[in-house]
Figure 1 (cartoon, rainbow, N blue to C red):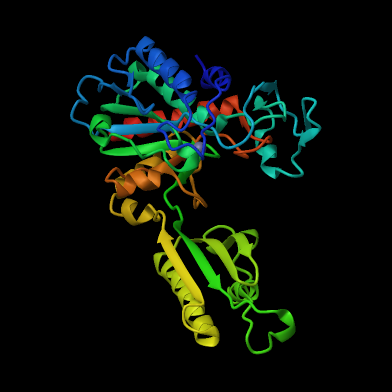
Figure 2 (tube, rainbow, N blue to C red):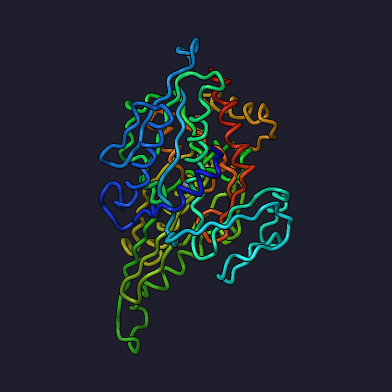
Length: 401
Ligand SMILES: [Zn+2]
């Protein structure tokens, strides 16, 4: 079976995760796909395939004869979809794409190379989209479909032990919460959760969040002279002291930023919350220092304790770990070349389960699936790109064998 045929099946499962839930998995419906994946793995000869109480699917493909001692390699994809309508996903197939605008069903949306120039790379291929009312769910069901297709092809190439995991709740940042590394058993792993199929992603942001509270001095405005301290205005002053060019809307590539997430308050009290992001560890530390410096400056100006800044680290750039395991990166790059693709290394401007797994002791770069425009109605993929992604993984497993 082709990878895209599997994708068309998986997208019919409603697997949206729920940020407001405290259970694991965050939504019960993720079990339906997870259980179906266990059955499919078993039907492909993965005898130990199972799903645990937290909705993690594990399975192991034994090495081909003579390769039993090769490094066990893990392949990981997530079953949940992002916080966007996925009910019901009605995929549309556009054969032999000619590079023109695509009208997405009756949604009024148009998928156009004017907005997404890299659509031109897909001319002549078979494009899959949603009908514009939902996401497609290729993030990350394309990754699952590609891994499953590699499993189906397991007897056609030499490989060492392969460890498979399908995880819940990646989109809400909880995909590693109950990940059982021992049961998984891989030395290195790869998430298949990126965009273009020739991408090898080894850099993620260093991430922190900052919550800043401002305590004002309220007074009748008619007699406020030299008494009132307006917390909302001090908050605005705080933000004005951050570099204006270093915001998400002005940055790309390896550039970091401060992202003002929310503003609350009035004269008496106010608060700001920010995301702090940078690939470079020293620059990341500088960003946090800058916030503390501004806090100090404002407290000196308005009185001690007026401004309280709390910064919490979230996750770190996985390159800090991966750089000590060059084979992990080198083989992914070489696998692309062996599959006839020119590998590109792109910085991942977000989090990934692989980053957390890397810091948990399982070095885990991210590979492309062939999909684009995740988390919205313009999400798309091609059948051919999925085939190429499958080939990259096969070449990768051959290199480790
Ligand atoms: Zn994803």
